[in-house]
Image (tube, rainbow, N blue to C red; front, side, top):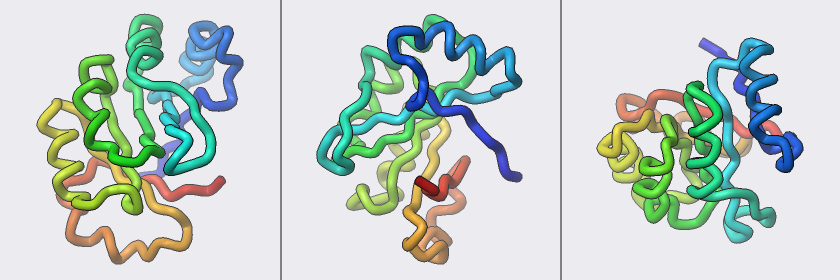
Length: 138
């Protein structure tokens, strides 16, 4: 099944609550939250404190897409902040299966993200651990 999920990356960060509520009214079923650290990717966005604030304004699942080095370090804090799904990059995880298991152990749905150049067959062994797969398009 293919599902389109609205991302808050293009939202006006001064009005996130209103923009998330607009996504809900528009039929959004999940809110995609891009977490960037300035190392794995050049941009910096948000972290657990903002995810906790978002959790207060929506009941929709929050899918935190971790575009960060060492994503395992942030999984517990994002779980505590109210994330429902965590998506980690195949290319950022030393032991992808361990990262996915850690996400599940914290009660969240694990996802894996691949870049367009990454061969899809590399995911075969971890598919039983995965709730969703995201193929980058930007």
